[in-house]
Length: 75
Image 1 (cartoon, rainbow, N blue to C red):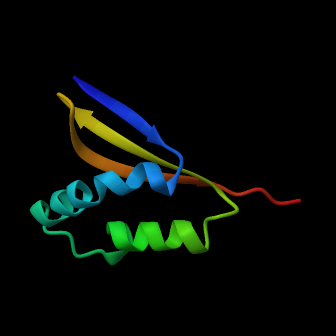
Image 2 (cartoon, helix red, strand yellow; image 1 turned 135 degrees about the horizontal axis):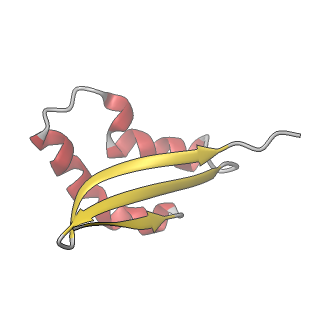
C-alpha cells in the first residue's frame, strides 16, 4: 500500500536528500529541474513567499517518489 508524507519546510526535506538523488539516479534522470539541488535552491530563494509543499510517496515505509506543489497568491 502506498502512503504519503507532507513536507512544508526545507528543514523537513533535508533528511531525504540522498534518497531523492538515489531514486533519480535509478531512473536515469536527465532533467535537472527535478533534482534535489534545484528544488531546494528554488525553495530557499524564489519559493520563500509561496506556499510550497513536497509530497513523499512511500511504499512499505520506504520513499519511492517525490513531487512538489506550489500555490501563488496575487493581489
